[in-house]
Length: 209
Image: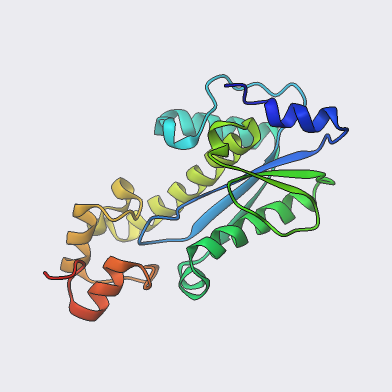
């Protein structure tokens, strides 16, 4: 797979400042959704960069440091409360727009490649299905978004270790659901998400418990 294909095609059309955007955290019951937008410099090289989900945590963290130091980037964060108000799809889009606008304050973005998300902003956007595995810029954004969100969950874990956030990052694992039923809800849960909603209504995360 040529991860530079989309960027190269755009540069052949005279578009040189291209951002890639992706989000992390659509599925968890807890915490914000985080997006990043990254503009890679000419001749950027990072062997092994791919969709953040396919990388080990150790490698993600190494790549994160390298990308932060060698690119122009922006990060957008949308809270659990906002997710409950506007739904996770719109919250993901909003986080991407925040990230893109942060980049625009630094350099004159000409084009954005997004991971499957149509975005209505003042520059052209190309949504690419599974873009984090097809575009180097989107792959870089996926790493920044994922590591940023994980860092937030590690901080929450320090305050509430009994929930196990460092292990499940807020996703609805069996251990996480058991922790909710044992300890209840703390601030930061997405109250519109099924297991949390069920717990609020019945005291159990799963229907029929």
